[in-house]
Length: 81
Image 1 (cartoon, rainbow, N blue to C red):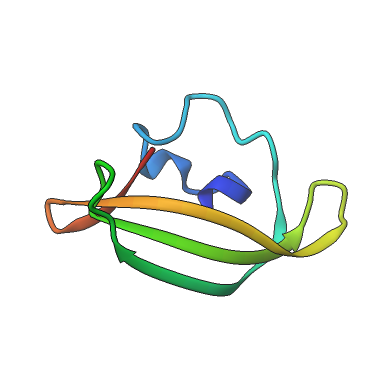
Image 2: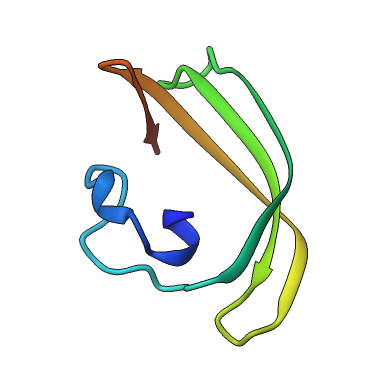
C-alpha cells in the first residue's frame, strides 16, 4: 500500500527513496496472492500478488501484478529491493 498510495513510506526508509510516491492510486484491493520461501535472493520470502485499483487519472484497472521480497529482522518482516 505504501508503494501505491504513498502512505506509510516512512516506516521503511531504506526501502523507499526520500522523494514522495510518483503514482498515487486509490480503491486498491488484492485479488490474489502467493508467498513462498526465497532462497535465490537476499530475502527470506517472495510474495507475488495481483491487485486492482484506480490510477492517478481515476481509471480503475484490475489484474495488475507485483513481486515483493521480504526479510525477517528483529521479529518483523521488512521489504527489501
